[in-house]
Image 1 (tube, helix red, strand yellow):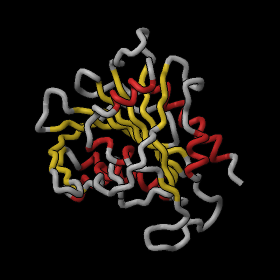
Image 2 (cartoon, helix red, strand yellow):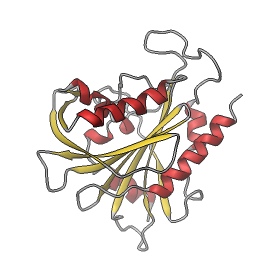
Image 3 (cartoon, helix red, strand yellow):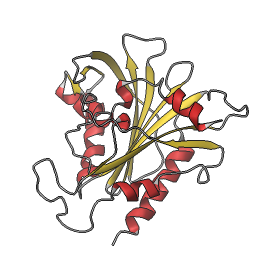
Length: 241
């Protein structure tokens, strides 16, 4: 499967669910209030370090990985949930989440197809982000808390576009320090508007995965890639000086 084909196929994924991954990469050592985030211990991984730790085709044989190349730095992908309890779920795919990302990189990936140029059955997108000490754990805990009380919400982006979603719990994600998954369904597109979202905390990083079938509907958990990505992040975190 050509990576160009994968890029084009990934563009067909639910726009709101891929909002954060479609933004440009970011790198910062200060929080939203301008204060240093290196309170103690080691600094968050930088964009360069995250890029180096991103899984590649050779890391996961049978898969094709395409790092995001977009340079869109606009803030049109900020998402606001109409129910406060659901906001952590909107934040996972928002360009401006409540818990600040220090740096992040993204990629589209799919199982390699036997026929060159063929569209894979499932397309996945991932967003790998580093956080200030303690914030990654806050992200995963906020998502778990949200899933305990949120079964649906309407997301509004910066342009005022509203999309109604229903939410249900997904399968267990057996990797990372903590993890969780859930399915988001576009209530206005019940036939094809669904995606599986998995969130994995590895140390001071959080990786979000979005999986959809090319024919429409939520895709399965890409566990081979998820496990390998967590392993590479652990190694990168351990190598920090």
